[in-house]
Length: 303
Length: 303
Image (cartoon, rainbow over all chains, first blue to last red; front, side, top):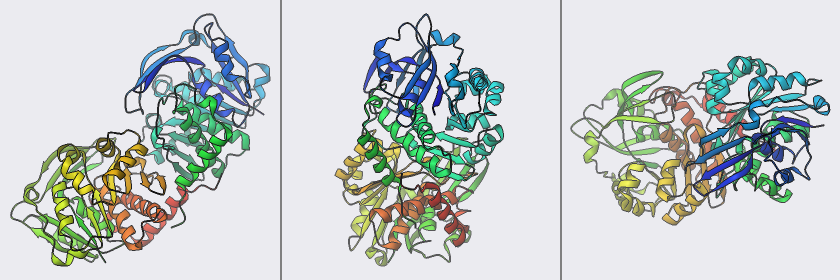
């Protein structure tokens, strides 16, 4: 049993009002796998360059993360350079150097092709579809993340891959652009017509809204004393959400609600430090405590 | 037993992507009292002009709303002209004509001076303090709403009145400006030092966060198919929240959580139509149904 994840493994140069980090470990598959592997074994498909050394590899060690599908190419790894102002909700992209990622064509190792769960991280929908087609058996569920760049620029390919998808994870602006609907309730109906039966809308510091055929669930974000660096929060959420779902082998509405809480709590750790620093260090007790505090915080007795 | 509310009773000229209304009933005390009076008798202190006629008065009739303190002055009523784009979260103020409100000095009728609950709507903090001083007995609780205009321009007066306040209702930007803290947890500690022991942060379509000495509670907004006009949502929330609290004579954390749900549901009705059109028409069944749907939507079993 494994959760297969395709995405980026990369370096980030980050600047926030609270400091900066250069050459920090980043990438969607990095955050995703560090988060998801707390709950379920993960297999990564991604590419790195010559600059990706033992220091970076060490972060994945000792965790149930299979790196067979992490290929190496000549050149530099994908690098993202971004900054945040005091409103930490929005990143300003200063540079995106695709490097070895520009020629990335995911090639699934044979052992990967029967993975029962699949997460298609935010990459070109043509590649996402290619991964789906390489699977020997149809996964129990397929989840997908995307962004406005692909919604605007690669819509036909995105619509093709969405037909194969069960769970769509996007933010407010993305779901509104994809459906041309402001109301999320109406947007969800259009998403269902495109393929996914479950829609998870990420709202940063405002939490998430989950749409399922059996009802809507909305939860705030876990409130923090200090947010240092929001990079990777969405991918960490996705990792916790999907890793937890894979671990319990259910996608009913109760399971999905719990998974949303787990994802939110995992993301709350990530943003407390730069890069993956905090995410690497979460103890079982810390995770359990915060989940319990969070449950208390949103619990309300019947009126 | 009554909840005394000071604020504006006014006319609004509104434009949204879904239509417009000219000379529509508006004002903070209007929305507040129509909402709060579903749960507890309300007394209004406000001023209107010659243009405020029987059509407007009729809206308040047949409800437990005491208008003894609604004074009439020569001239036009307060008028606000605003528009909203597709992002209905932010109003663009096109004009604010204070008219008779410019010389408003609340003068409490003798019967009002022993009201056990007091809501100071968003007006000049000098006037808010004046109302507090006119009370013959200290209310069981005092709640206050304010805005950036007063935080920036009348801070000493605002700090004086905050010393008397138990419950502060503001939005994200206001609490951050007032405390110079981005983290709401840190902001709450500074608010407590200024006076209020309870902080309710309004976040529009993202719901509310409640800070109490016994814990934090966060709830999303009630998701709607269609939002036509967000005007009055905050005042409707405050009315439902405080009217419910007054009705149950408690301010423990469970009571506050329930009050936040009631306020959110009341606000969800207001925004479905222009002005007070929907708020005037809510049946007991509709209210009960939506409260029950909302409770289901945020309920999650223990993990």
